[in-house]
Image (tube, one colour):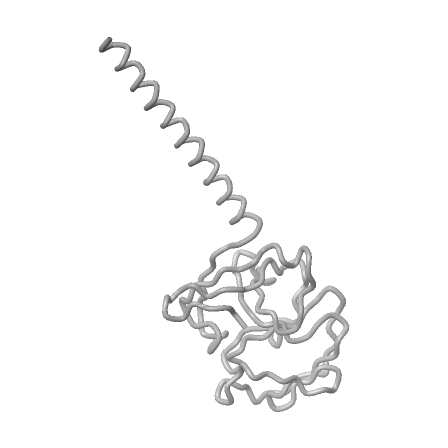
Length: 182
């Protein structure tokens, strides 16, 4: 009787461990899928996207959205830097393919119309001029929100679509600044 009860407990324990292992593997598989194809955490390095994103803040990027939706002006995108694809940058899309961009004393004009940029405080604005430049097909003109310190398309040209791999959607660190990225 004792052996029968002991064997049953061992079988129950092994069944429980099997269920746990199977569930753990399933959860890890789902997590790997999500990180590989849908969402990825990234750390912001530098101040070029202030005040929206500060140095060392953490954001989730949506890696799937641009497979379904178009990249739009105002999107904050994460991309491999064309000059060194081992580095990732985060910037805001300012001009779309086929548009003409000009910058006059820091004010951005798209197709001769002033671009409203309420996300840039006056003291972060650059006073430089550039262009006019026609953005090539499959390219985007990207700039940091802290224009006076940003290394962006003004310095290295329009960004080809193939380098863009995600859209910043949610700040999650620091905890007191959790929210959507605008």
